[in-house]
Length: 350
Image (cartoon, rainbow, N blue to C red; front, top):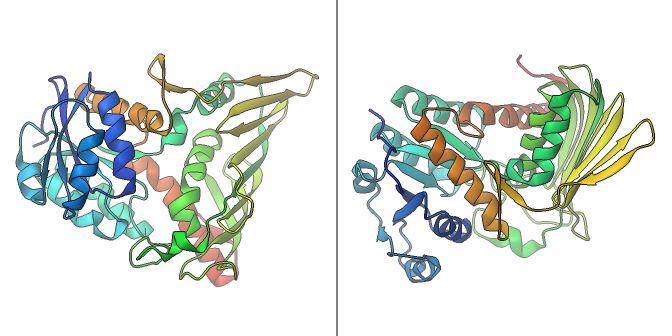
């Protein structure tokens, strides 16, 4: 039976103490009107002092005992930020104890593992949400509003560009860019955020023709380059290019070309070019949570996701991005990998 999250602030456990844990601790402190960081579960005691310094209010319990935290009725929500290779077992322990799970991407290292994680939570009756924080950026929210209003007309073409740079030290971290730990390279680790945002605006992809590669710029097992042609279920066509071998590092960009205008979306703003000659720049880099902007840097995006998830659990509704919705991104990545491996187009299941 799933635990209740009716009382405020809601007790939250953070599972994993890697680099992204710092962002979550800061976000949880900023959202302390709604949540309380009750425990950090990690096998790295050296991280406890560092993370404790980031906490505001009472310091959380630091422990390696996942089962005890999962069984605690005062902790109905857990944020899972472990390496992908150990998440399935962690989530199964939490779900069986009735703990709702907010999961850092990816849901799994493979599409099959991701589906299994979603089904574990569904069978246990707990809510599974996924941290796709690009959705809460003001440019993303404004773009979604314009698409929903319908004035742009039919979608004709989509461009998804993720031109990132990572030097070799990024991949020298133990397990980074390996199939055993991460499940893949640039697509699952980096570009999945832009994939999720794009699909939330365009709807599903029907088929892909793709190539992936490991460039000579990196020593790694998985891909640092992916290129794909996309055909969407709505009839539009598009392109997807993602890499961590593009120097200098640039921001991710999504361009959507409709009958009556085009949108250009990045982290800094939304540009709209209408066919009748009008143009505008909307929505800077502020972050939205409900009806209010949030102050702060990168952690504000995570804060908005956390606040939405806790509210969703309390209200019995779906979170911003449910585990099952996140499977759309995994299916596209799996299709790109399949097309690259076979040299043939790959149809996605409808």
